[in-house]
Amino acid sequence: MTAVLTHPGVLRSCEDAALPGRLAASQRAREGVQLSLEAFDAWLEERREAHPFRVERVPFAAAEGWSFDDATGNLVHRSGRFFSVEGLAVRSADGPVSEWHQPIIRQPEIGILGILVKDFGGVPHFLMQAKMEPGNPNLLQLSPTVQATRSNFTGVHRGAPVRYLEYFAGAGRGRVITDVLQSEHGAWFYRKRNRNMVVEVDPETEVPLADDFCWLTLGQLNDLLARDNVVNMDSRTVLACLAPLLPSAERVDGALTPTAELLGWLTGQRSEREIEVSRIPLRETQARGWHRSATEIAREDGRYFSVVAVSVRAGNREVTGWHQPLFAPRGPGVVASVVREVGGVPHVLMRARAEPGFRSAVELGPTVQCVPENYEPADRPPLLDYVLNADAGRVRYDAVQSEEGGRFLNAVSRHLIVEADDALPHHLPPDFAWFSVPQLNALLRHDHYVSVQARTLLACLNSLS
Image (cartoon, rainbow, N blue to C red; front, side, top):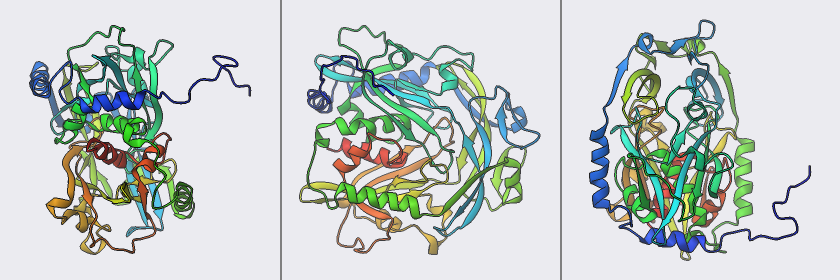
């Protein structure tokens, strides 16, 4: 294979030396050139009132375009695209449950999560969208400029074209700041990935501003991350992937553990954890603790989650009405990171987390990630009570954030960042390790290292800098 040189014989800079300083200016700009936060609140409420939004539970038989396959029982769309709900059989030597079966979302398409950047008054601004997702508890949240599956941006839904897609795909796209494939929820998606992109256009480029879009600085987005259910999950993961380029991500030589040793530890976790995953027909889960009624697929003991169908009306989407399945958790989750400074360098306690839908079996997850009511008292995850009982003075971040509203119904988790104290156990299970924030930021340039929940907490941690 022969490499293609865009400028044969001419060396180019590996990094944009000016970018960290420009992003720092955007972080400091809390008011913005285009829209103040006070004006943003009024704008978001205006967008909420400008369109009819309605989400209603319906029986599966009333979900137009969706049906259960006669042979497998899989819940599929008549187009054969979008996604399907199938079955998964899992065996694991770790944890309180060694074998289980469950429904899983299979969506092999790679979507685009992209944020467009443009300078106004010398300050980089980010083009964000007020997007309705049927599973969001408040329906309307801030999404990336483009948040679309391949089925959507290739027109399978026969709706309007995806706005601003041309800046992220094709020959005319803008200058790439970051572009990396990242996983999504490995407990509910089977090997799902999205392309996380930040793309910049020249200040002179005219970018028409559609009604449901606004320009915000990075500082304004950081302020909004402190609020409950304003910045959606897709925006949070893209902002996390921007972290390696922030000034705070500049190389720091000090860390509790050298990077090579940490990567060896993670490789060992991936090699030694025994987890076997097999796709099975959804019909087979009904003999393994699940039942299907006219309105839901659920466990017989009522735990974990259910699969339901909804009817959706949304005036500001490419298609204004549709039906679809959603996964509905049985309760709110807790997603928490324990942090500490060592020699002035911030560190995060990460857990090597195995989830059946991960392509690499194990990714770096938060210190704690669970739905507490799914666990018996004797099986509560390590450090769950430690973070929940933390003194207020040690809690650096505390907000409720929703998960992927396009596939999950009212899936919310309390997100916490907690300073470690002397009560933190000195001897932790072998699947925990301390990473410096610069080490984690460097891993965000690569796929399948840091889970989507951990990326959210890193975006929130960076917002506090």
